[in-house]
Image (cartoon, rainbow, N blue to C red; front, side, top):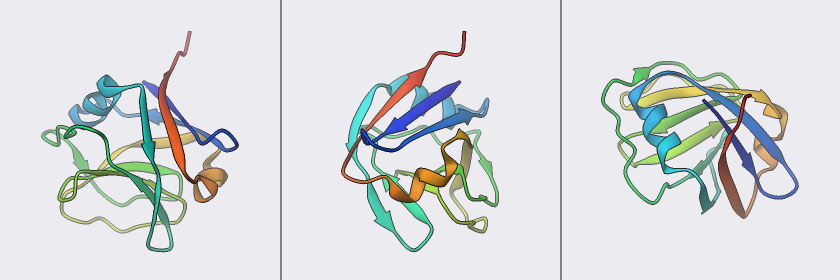
Amino acid sequence: MQIQVTDGTNTVVFQLNDTTPAKSLYEMLPLEVEVENYSNNEKIFYPPQEVEASGGIEGDCNAGAIALFSPWGNVVMYYGPASAYPGLYVLGEAIEGADLIGNLSGTIQVTARRTD
């Protein structure tokens, strides 16, 4: 499962893992949502419905990772590393445009990317 995140200028492609939270997010696509800055290493957005967290993999997130922060229900895209935290579930990693995550702003489109 691959997803594309774009603000019209910057585009990032993520390869999602084979977990319930990743599949839950993927099934919601396409999305048009606002992206927000959070801290000094991440961009976040809130899906319109809750992402299923059960069966997720908690762990550290490197720059380029995409994750679910289940306590708040937001999706996190990291442009700097982050340590593991309870309820932070790794969804996948950027395979294109990881260096552009920090530039994302405004309204973003999150869509499924065909791989065939």
